Amino acid sequence: MTEARAPGQDEFSDTRFMPRTPRGRWRAWLNRRVPPERRVVLHRSNVFIFPSRTGFAFVGLIGLLILAAINYQNSMVFGLAFLLASTFALAISHTFRNLNGLTIEAAGVRPVFAGEHAEFAVRLIRATPRGHHALWLGWPGEIRQNVDLDEEVEQQVHVPVRAPRRGWLDPGRLRLETTWPLGLLRAWTWLDLAQAALVYPRPLLAGPPRRAALATGEGEQLVTEGHDDFVGLRPYRAGDSLKHIAWKSFAQEGELMVKEYGGHADRRLWLDWEALPGLSTEDRLSTLCGWVLTCDAARDEYGLRLPGLEIAPGRGEAHRSKLLRALALHGEPPHPHGDAA
Image (cartoon, rainbow, N blue to C red):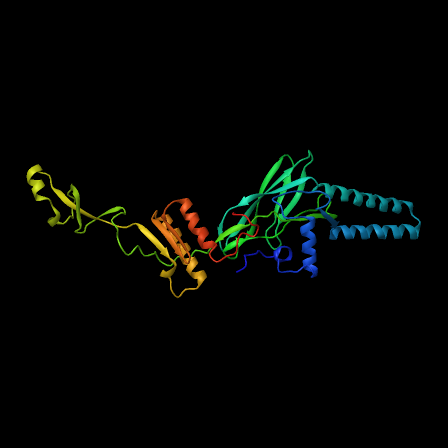
């Protein structure tokens, strides 16, 4: 299986594209120009700038003014055209400087369930006294986030991307762009912050899991109204069975007491792959995921059995995360960036 990718990711991160194709050559060039790093400082080598649609219209207006000034020999129109051209030239400098010197670094991402949005934390840090305004971050086809670094030295932003399936989610390259201050030019960069999100299977609640077949007597003792081992005496309550009344104690103490019985129940559960025959791989994993959440909510002690893997029963947040991670990565390739996330 291949790892999950967000919409728009293939253009920059799918290794199936060979360098001999136009898209492959573009991706290889971009990897050399802006290599994958968890911390990137923007400068003239990794920032691109080009006129926006408004900018092209502005340039067209300047051209028309120059043609009109030449045709009518009007010096005031020449002056206006040169003034607009100077404004456009200054806008190039200010738009580039709005990104230049900015540091962007990966700040982590929490695991999510399939079908949810993974929120990648991105930290922006400015190294100069000047601010950075009207910055937009996002992946193609996803919701973009707006950031302004005016008084803050750094700011952390959570950039969402949809997680369609379990496994490692490599969202590809993040787009950071700005059109500040006049909207005449667009400066942007494509950043690969070398991070991936762990996506758990989509939980499927299909009834509670069955308990272990054999009670070992090592679990918690549960008080019942059965006829197993004698536990002790308790005061009589209305509705108690008369056959459980301790008449001998009543004769000695004068207080009506009831015999209480109990038994040992094995609270340990095994969430077993083989207990779900006939289901597809993803449906089995989704059902097991739902069982993990159910057992964790009930504070049971539970373990997991997968083909080639067995995790002993336990409880707690760390144990829950360990089992969910095992379900997420069952049959999946390793981390896309070679890290043990």
